[in-house]
Length: 128
Image (tube, rainbow, N blue to C red):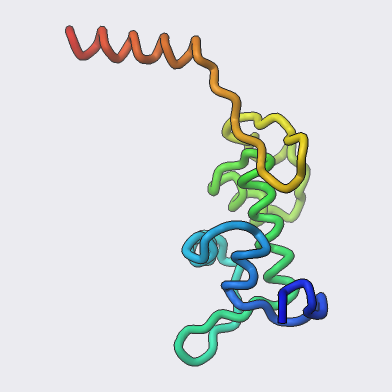
């Protein structure tokens, strides 16, 4: 049975959630270690089953990290706070331009001039 065939409140396995979000399973396990709010049920053999609330939280974490540019620490602060006003929370690590399609997250734009300056500074520091 495909994930889309399941009821919205049905449990999801780590494989199903991984496919839905487009992230590897080890990333979901990493998120569990970093976000105390993300706690799927674990059955025999450490099989993870994500409840509807866990799925919603994982979607939110994914959106904040991949689309809105938050760091893991920034998302932790956001989830720990009762007031979710972005002004009260750390700003994203770098702004990311919105993607023209919602299927793929937007890639951060590279500032080539800044990278060239950094390279030159590193080169000068190494030769000194």
